[in-house]
Length: 101
Image 1 (cartoon, helix red, strand yellow):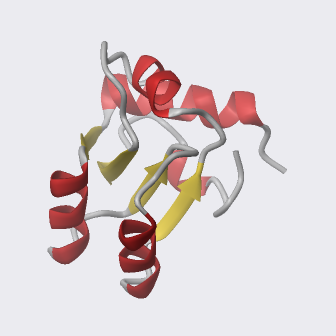
Image 2: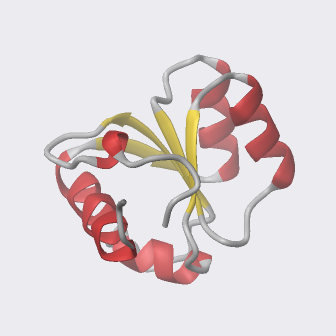
């Protein structure tokens, strides 16, 4: 079982080495274009975006951190409510099971 430290580490490595987008509009576009391999949501997320993600059969994680904390983990000085992974880089984010974190 993956613990929260592993999820946080995977997101941090993704932010440094991978390719991802954040923001509702950008994440929605990645889902619509089937480019997202995974979507990570903070604890405060858009329910419709989560439903869209699941309907598209894209793996998703609801990470139990608020958007400000998720932004900090991503190395951003602002809140991030969702991010879509296009390339995991050196992280192991895609191996994390859904709903963990």
